Image 1 (cartoon, rainbow, N blue to C red):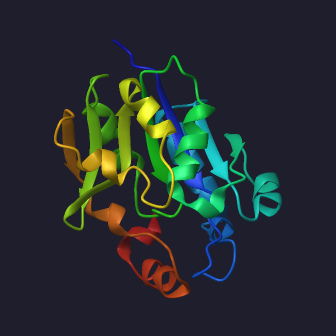
Image 2: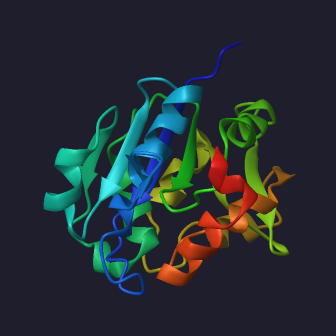
Length: 195
């Protein structure tokens, strides 16, 4: 059975700690957000959406291969971006993979580990830094809860619940995200930046 998976990339934040639109930092000739879109299309071609908010006028013209969803309430945080994203995906899909545009060290192989563990009814979460967090793959039975999210906690509360069928996948490289110029410099010095 082939499951119909949608991908939602969260890229709406203002990147205030970075000091500029980090979504557009170039790496090997592509912006961070475009690299994330390309990886997502590598596993779920044609089913990729990206949520933009801050700096969207600057970012939107520079991306391709994804449906753009605008979150006018991006200041409210990740929860609001997930909620507006879920409103705009195919409601008939079997599952939703949520990615962050700045988790630069993730590979297509990492994302395939999540997909391979998904059976259509369970939730599959990356596990790193002693916690469950995105990237995570949610079944359609949780779409209503995702649509109800708000604030900056994102989907963490759902992932911590004990009453859902959840599979954890160890993905230490998901801990690499870019919040500051120092994070970016560290990443460029790391072995995973060569891909």
